[in-house]
Length: 412
Image (cartoon, rainbow, N blue to C red; front, side, top):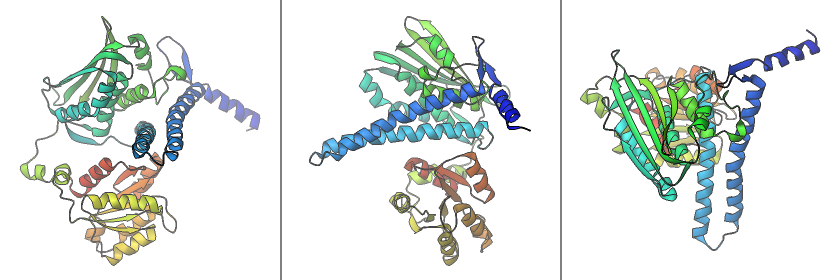
């Protein structure tokens, strides 16, 4: 094939119609890619501007500790937003492409809603907004669903809604469940806002029901909202649907509906062995961890986080040293945490050698967690083949680290 023909074919592929929007317009692959890049650039540059600006201001505050703390707080907030946005995009894309899978867990909806309500208290106070939540309609109080996805859906429904509320507005959250004839449950999450600075038609245009893939609905990136688009995609990967309804009198309602499974009742023995309960009771004390990371700062951070909750830690700088430590200690570790990309020997090769070592009863049963800086599906697939059980994306969130370790060491 000539270069000219190849170019022509590529142009033709780029003009493939991804989907037809509600107003009949055709959205092409090249247009969707350009829209995503524009939106992503804006979402990354904004927090980076805050991080760099506050870092410079903090550098000039040598005699005012309080001012320094405020600058550092703003840097942390912006960095966490950047981290979470990238993590959301990678997770959703991985699920859509089949490189990541939903991980159903038992979820107490009352506790989840209560935790979410507590987490937005400061935002409500800053905007002088009224808030209420109602969980009295939970016919099924505990469901089986991907906790991360559901938490993101609930959080983005509330937090991104608050971003479009005028001061002195009101937000009401209602979560209900009902049993289905097939043994599962219907979950409905309603968020009603009084005092939106936007109209229902604009929101409805974002949550286009005829989308076919990741972010293909970004037809107007300059007026798009990353949080709402991520909300749309999380609902999409959980086979749910989202709707917007104008109720009049300045009120609009966003509704998410999805089907979820109902967990089987657990025995008292299973309840007492839950990783979450054990961690809350300080039961990590006495556990031993082997960690490997070639970045000394990351290694020290992970070590300190584990020691804080009672771990005895063996820390090494590459995969070869991890394998040597495993053999020297004859596998007496409760968990192994490996950075994927390391000199001398990477995390995947180290995991393979640990799995092949003796005693086999320990080498095959010890949970191995991978640390990765990208979180892309290729890393996940490659590491799973090497015998790695779970994955954490840098920068590490301490609560997530403890939850994953608890699930690994004390599985339900």
